[in-house]
Length: 250
Image 1: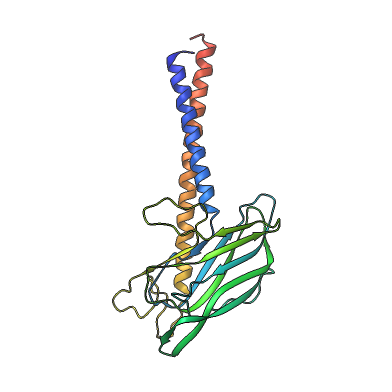
Image 2: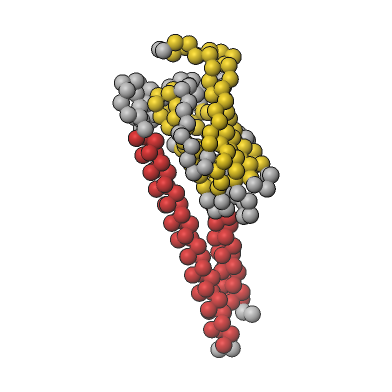
């Protein structure tokens, strides 16, 4: 094999492997349990958090999801929707070590765990679990929601690892909600103005954020697809040139 053909062969192989690596990384990232939107303003009121749970198994179904809410910076006024798609939510509350004072009085108890059972998430599918809240903490930089995902084969994946600033993403990261600073004139709604203390509807901003998440996901998918197509095209061109030169005896 000539030097030119060897170089073309190596270039095609390296490009194809690089594209495969990108696909593998994208697949691994999409398998994580995440919370949407990924940020709210501190002290935001009357909003919705959506926990997206994908099934990463090929032969088992997800049959149980447990989300643990922090109690050192509690989420107040937690509500869950009625049962749907077979899923039923069990809400567990705990007494707070430090009661929270609000305009409506002092809160001594808060939800610490929500467990969904009864439904199924099949291979290659995901389920969104909505949680409405009355008020988020007005202090801290983030909320970590440790999550357990149980499969029909008895395996439990513990999404409990907290990402470290500046470090690599852990293997099983917990869903993290960033708490951003309030903007001028913000009465407690999220960064996009999801809600305030005036009683105006507050659920539209999370929907907008979900739309943004969907757009970002679509853009990433298209970018990955473009990379793969380009890689395959380069590899095909390289192999075609190799066959052509071999046929002419070069």
